[in-house]
Image (cartoon, rainbow, N blue to C red; front, side, top):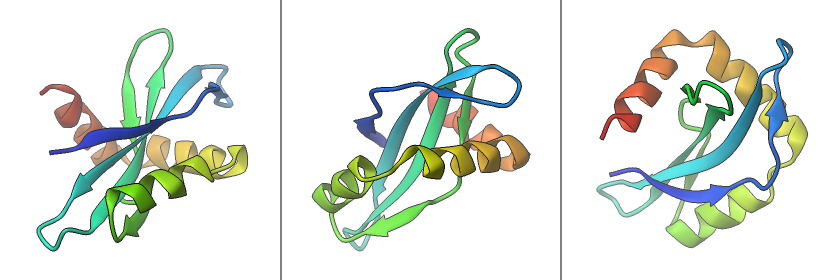
Amino acid sequence: MAESVYEHPHTLSFEDGREYRIRVLGEERSDHTWSGWIEFIDTESRRKLSTGQETSQPNREALVYWATGLEHVYFDGALERAHTHPRKRERASRKGSH
């Protein structure tokens, strides 16, 4: 089951003026490695957008370390990817409905 491993302290503006909170989610796989992706939450509508897998890490601690090192320019690209992949938006909706 996915869990939030890091919440970025700042919001991110998209080109249409919407503001998003940023968090990194992760999930342990059957081989005990971790998959990580980024979720963006619209500060007004609370709509969630999600990227596909952004990283694979050997454990949860390494995933947290990866997440804390991400910079704004990375988040800009990730938000663009989340906006342009409808399949990934559906995944975000399913994950948010639990």
